[in-house]
Image (cartoon, rainbow, N blue to C red; front, side, top):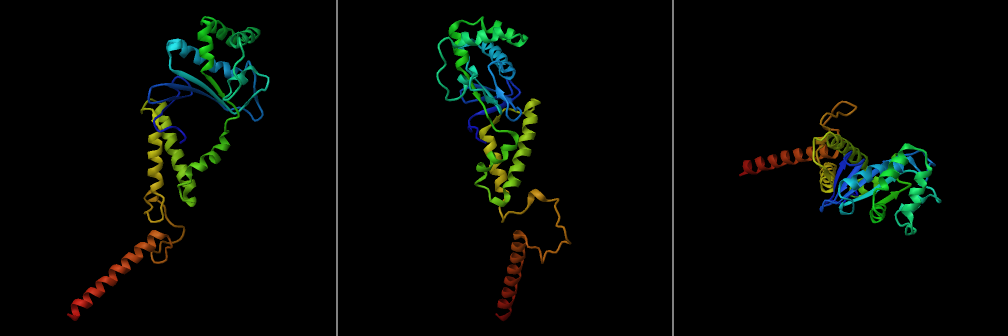
Length: 258
């Protein structure tokens, strides 16, 4: 729900998540949920697997001319001595020869992944290498799954406190259905405006004066007794019925006296 209303979101497209703004510019996001306490080193497999994907998209879409940016969001922390620290948001400027330093590290690795990336990366001109690396951001120490509810809470301030869990669960259910349809190619990308429109619709159903249309299959634990039901909408209906009866009696009495 923090997504800009004009942005569109895709899942499992060019990366785990893809954001597109109104101008068609893409942000490809790789999501990594790691064990508590894990750190990300220079030769982190998670990072370089993402780089392999991004490098392929960068070359495919015209190198310098492409409109991508790249992000790895990980629950792990980037190690303080790792070269990857220069990809953190707000990090110091990359040192001179940074691309060459990364290539040296890749050559030291014995993994097939590192060799593949080093070979592909080395086909780029120096300006292209620097341009590609400048597009990458790492968001480390990202929220873990158990922390999402707390992060979601401030966005529900407009919802009455007693209904916040219900509204959140409704939104989670809706999002899951839409995400599945998106992955299966059964719908268009999800926009921020669509998310907020759905939130407004769900929230509008949770006011004391609204009839419980969402829970038409729900029944009270005890026997139904309309005269003793304390739910506000039932009390309002009783009052409305009483007022109608009283009005009818007054009207009959008035016309009868006439």
